[in-house]
Length: 415
Image 1: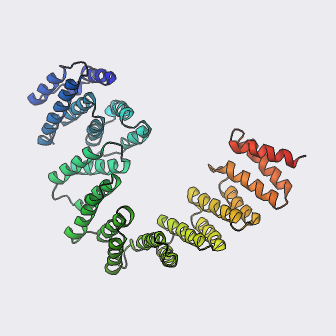
Image 2: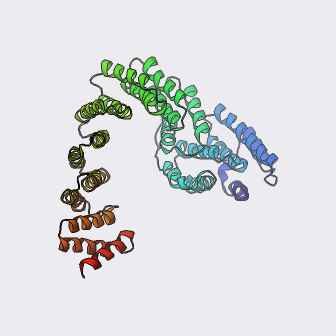
Image 3: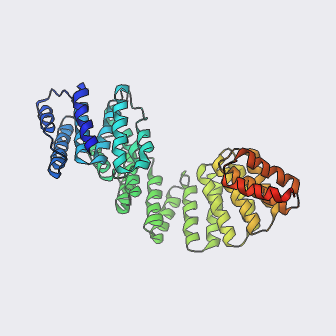
């Protein structure tokens, strides 16, 4: 915390932006200079200053000194040990005043705050600063900020982001995209496990905005919470069926079928799940969500002991999403496992693994793929391609754990 206090002093010493002209801000600034030794009382005093500055910010949203106030508030929160609230204040500076000159200072303070919140999220926190809001109106800047914060979902920011949402709705009651912002707020609640609040936000969109283009989406999202989070399958099915009946041409239909399939699979009604997966695959086509339906179909086939069908399904999924390295390699890797463990077919295993190495020879899982491909060749009685595959692994990935295993198998082959 001593580093935070030092940074606080330096900020006042080095940043002319803190030369507040407003009498109230000037008062808070003078009070902030009366710091103690990081005692509980000192932190409480800094927290009170931050809250009082926040009142000024709400009362003067268009003031030319808003930037000064937000930077002061961020420093008060840092001094108070309320790093999550400091983050939100710093982001407001970046989104409302997107000038390059502040970027270095903001980045440094955000990194400092994330050290106290969750160090592993520092990179994610800094990515939020990359959003460009230059030229947007203030309400669109605030909407963009909320969207970025929801997408980042940084630890301990739940309550301050909630307050940003509340302020936004109170300040802009006639905003043309309020329906979209409510869906965003619902997502925020759901990410932070406030499921009843998420349902309320989604329902408001469906029931209070007769002309919204998100009616079907709001119904689907509501049902998703009941099925995936609250495990109230009966309510979820009723809402999904309402969506299917009222909006048969919606883009949400394929996703609904996929989610119905997941629920039936959880209930162990594999016949119903398989039927829903088929309908989802047909409706979703090549959309990204279709990949999960293909994987779900294969999962049901495995549970029904239709291993050949599962293998073929995964190959079809890989072919459909061949341009997506992750999806392509995952589907083929799972197909290879089915061939090895269930079908006991090294030929089919090798065929799937060969496709991976042909299309994505430098994929992240290449060492494992090469090792398993070499094993498959050995089982097929093909020592020469097996040896070549092991050598390729050893040469290209000498420090990987699979390289040492490959060396052992290669040594046996060359005896």
